[in-house]
Length: 125
Image (tube, rainbow, N blue to C red; front, side):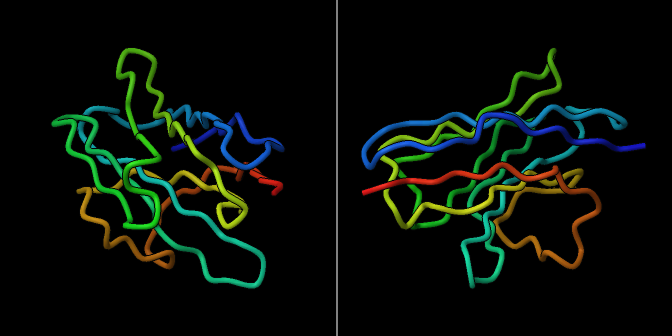
């Protein structure tokens, strides 16, 4: 059974940083991609980043590129999302998803197999 456990959300002020973690189990970690969506109040869920845990290839949505960094610690079966320079518009619930056959920035929420439980990130101005 695939399981994803997230941690690391919280309340920060604009310009500060947070790191989210997504610990995975139930599949061969290095064979798949793991990604991140976020959903702001009243908005659709959007994919913002992913990483191919085997090759290290990464994808970032334009709105977070240069501020967010996705990485994986394969021995720990964990993916991280380091978020720097947070802004109020980054306020959302962040969800990791897996396993994905590739990292292309084209994941569809309706086709995601397993979601993490979500981590609330609130950025005050």
